[in-house]
Image: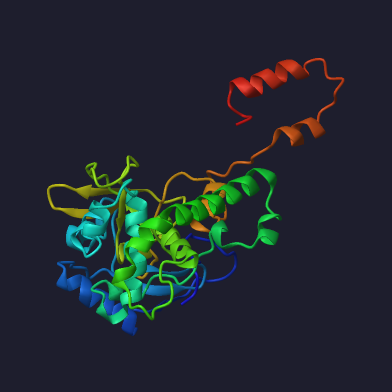
Length: 323
């Protein structure tokens, strides 16, 4: 399985986009069977490999604006509620100070992956990337090639994941009884980095009630198997939300798709810096693209003899262009 590439729509000129249906591959057969057992019914989307984006979902029929693309039952979603009902629940509820909802999900992903065939989430885990393209995976030499504003953000991301891991070590130690004594360390940094990227790049927004067993950090995560195969394109419009009435996470398209087209969603009006940091890709022709300019770059390209410099500088600051 390739790393997390192909999460965005990229247009290639003078080259026809081809798609190869992947729905008959073993891992996708098992995933769809697993989802069906949990109440998911879908006959219009199929996993496919596209020449311009890599893995994605294509439609098997014409889709009109306003139509439901996908409706994923709550029983298919992986949330902190599922984690608390699992073997990890008693450890989380008894731990002080409380851990974050993010750490709870990361820990569950790692321990379920370790469980292998014994995990009820195996069909989903098998289709997840084994590595990601987010800056947290980059070597320092590569990070140093980035322009200054995004370089600092990339380093912040790397520090944040290392701090998450370091702060979780006492909690991880409390889980040692879950693993065989002969087992090497399961909850190591690389595993946490993988789990963090899985949550960060693949969750949909779903607000949950605050629980005393978690820290004050907002619990807005839900991993959505199959739905998360949908790639991002900045030009599409969708409506996405959890339906309290139907107890499903639903996405409706606002644009038309022809039969066998790749179906896209939009992660938000993000510029390429945000996309690279959060998801590990950039979008060609991104209408939301921005250029980040540092104070030093501005000073290098203006004359110190400019009598209006101070006034211009104040205007930039007042309008938030120096942040």
